[in-house]
Length: 322
Ligand code: G3H
Ligand code: 13P
Ligand code: ZN
Image 1 (cartoon, rainbow, N blue to C red):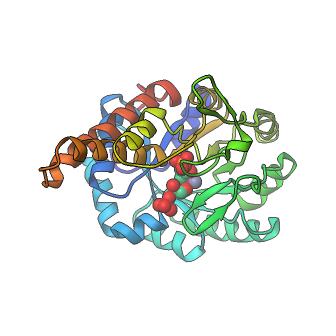
Image 2: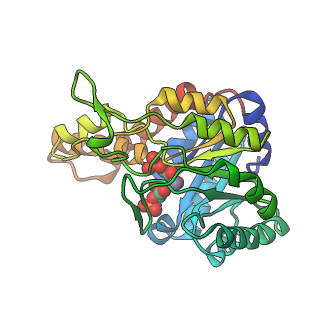
């Protein structure tokens, strides 16, 4: 199977009550870990590349790595997506350069400016067989150079979604219902603590999601900032010399519920970073004399694979849906 767009993936996910995982890729081990898990579980998957990933690894290297993964996993649909494109030029460069899907994130602009830029990207993308994700509302956290402090995010206004989708022609819509980017999604003040002293975040705004679904029946919704920040990885990082106090994510059961509704794409990056970093720290602590990168990148790649396999089966519900 060649690279696909997300059109068909989302239609099946919407009708089947599951979501497709969109995982950020920055190097070979990450691409391999994700696609080996998806391949073995016969799951569709979206590999997404941020502006920062392109700056780090280079557009051509990333496209070729993804093409290799497609060749190695011929039985599953794989889409290549631009994450948080912030200009028409960046989106155009990815459309011209082999991506099958792009996000134009003009959510920090005014409603009218967001519509104008999104529409411009949609026209070019659709003329080239590429689909477009847009965003309404702002998430807290860090994405590329933009930092939105917790408490300064704004939920999507459901009364705007219909007009936005009609006027832009976008293919999917990212909304803000309380998810957040990064490993520190909420301040301690926004959370309560459980008996073990672990932060419990405020629940997602399912009322906002339900309102959006009512106004956009059948339309695929996207959730960004959906890492769960597994405490086993946070503990591993902290045990082996790291310092990540009060890292907290979105509880898996809330994401599972969203996946059964209209949410067709769930974005995960921070959990990949944590899985790799925890395991590499552990490896270094346990093998201080080793210096071959293959030795410590191997368990890191395996940890990404295990984490993605867990998400596919227990959070996304996309196993067996290829
Ligand atoms: O939403 C942001 C993603 O986690 C990508 O992060 O811009 O540091 O590659 P990055
Ligand atoms: P996390 O930081 O929660 O993994 O979110 C990633 C994301 O939304 C990428 O666009
Ligand atoms: Zn995001």
